[in-house]
Image 1 (tube, rainbow, N blue to C red):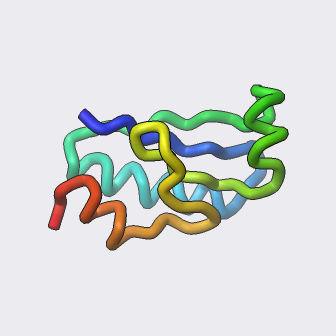
Image 2: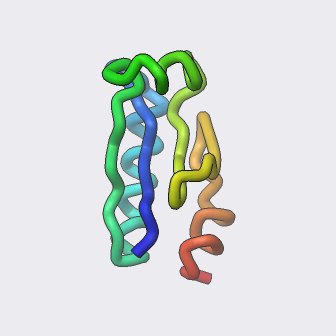
Image 3: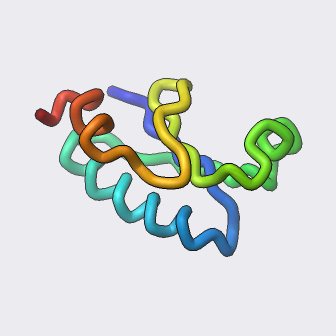
Length: 79
């Protein structure tokens, strides 16, 4: 099962939109999304700063600011 994570922070409108998009795609793929608050981890906060939301697929950066839906669907085997 793919590991799908969303790096996010409270009060981020783009993060909310990304979360809604990811939940929909994850459901189609039969997996779940784990949200990770970058502000709760100093290393993540230093690495990503204000560059959220970030989508990680199996531990690798997949997209940021917006979800690359066609690429994610392809990488999850949905097309």
